Amino acid sequence: MGIGINLGNTLDAIPNEGAWALAAEQYYFSSFGNAGFKHVRIPITWDDHTQTSAPYAVDEARMDRVEQLVDWALAENLYVIINAHHEDWLKTAYADASNKARFDAIWTQIADRFKDKSPKLLFEILNEPNGMSVADVNDLNLRTLGIIRQDNPTRIVVFAGNEFSSIEALLATNVLSGDYLIGNFHSYNPWPFAGQCTRSWGTQQDMDDLEDIYQRAEDWSSENNIPVTVNEFGVAKYDFTQPENICDQSERLAYLQAHVTFATQRGISATVWDDGGSFALYDRALDTWTADKDILVLGNQ
Image (cartoon, rainbow, N blue to C red; front, side, top):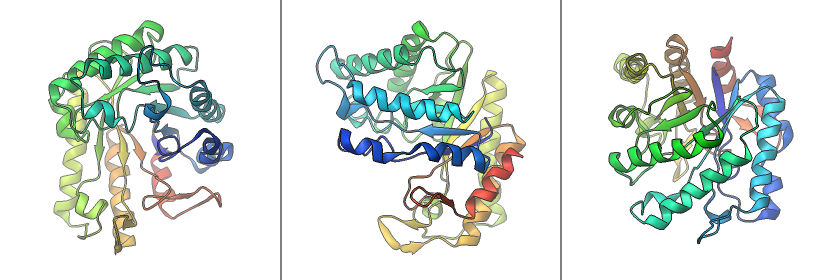
């Protein structure tokens, strides 16, 4: 899938149905393709649009909106990943049997709704299961894969480890069996640089530490005969919690270049995080790009 882009904060922070249509426009996807990206990840939160008691039906308008975005992306010949994103109700109370039943019902409905879509549509089980144990995630991954496989026996399913889906979490997680799987990790290492802009980056040690993450991912992939992806990486322009902390632009570009180099050298697909805010590289209103884009799409040449 090469290098792709996250369409963050599109379907995970929209408070009401009337605002959904303002969250993403069709031209975004043509811009992504024209820029040279190969795939798009669409983070989706289902909580506020799903009943809290059985049968846990997902609001039809929500499902329609998700399908519209998927169809727009597929029409541009992009691979597209949809997931369950900020589902804190599950992550913080996984032991609750009703929460498990609700999450199962959500994926049952997603799997049924999208079962006839192009194989370029991928399902990602759960984003960053922070608060869940390794055992919790092992249970969740196995159960959700079984639900998906009932209607989607050959669709690619993306799974990750617990907490914030680091490479260490992926290595500690049970490997799912079968075909059409991709292991996933996230990397904003080191966070004091990439997220908080409180330190510099670019020494040989910095480069070696980042490359080691990709080497461990490649080793895991070879050992388990499963492709691996880093479906979130990136670097902020500033710390959104403390905007006075600004990352050096030359260091930002070098950091992104390093990610692209290490990923493409190893055949690892990678998805840069773009939240429309401090991590933005695409201006959604003006349909323009920052200098970050040229470095990223070089990995697709």
